[in-house]
Every structure is written in C-alpha cells, then in structure tokens.
Length: 66
Image 1 (cartoon, rainbow, N blue to C red):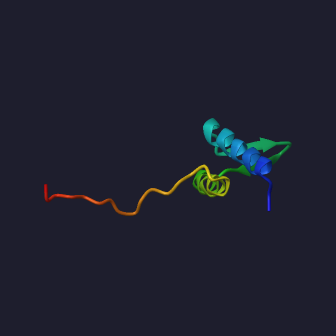
Image 2: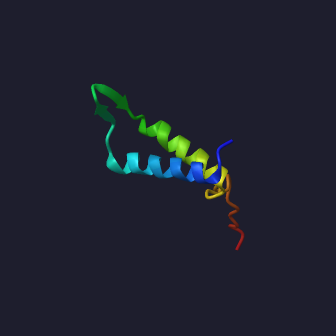
Image 3: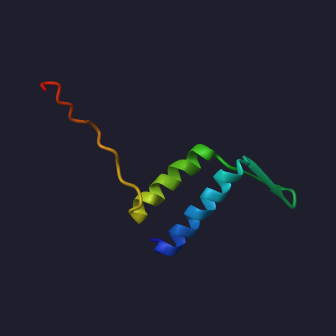
C-alpha cells in the first residue's frame, strides 16, 4: 500500500495533467495518451483513501407536510 505522501504526490500529478488539458504527450518519439475519465476516477479513489472526499447522501428527506 502506498504511503500518504505517495498518494498525495499522485493526486498532485493527476491534477497537473487534468489542469493542462492535454490528451497526449510525446517525448523522444514515445507518445503517451491520457484518458481524462480514468484519471478522474483514480483521483476520486485516491481522495477516498486519503479521507478527503465524503460521499453525498443517496436520498434526501423532504417534509412536505408543513
């Protein structure tokens, strides 16, 4: 299991990729493509592991009786 520092570093890396808006990168003839949907899913998973993200309630209680 990764340490909190490693998870935070990965989260920062994902944020940088998403903020740049790039979908691919080419270095020395090697092209790397980024799937933004998969990165967002991984970001949510890491936030859950770090305890930064709380789930929204599935249902809300609405009282219409006055």
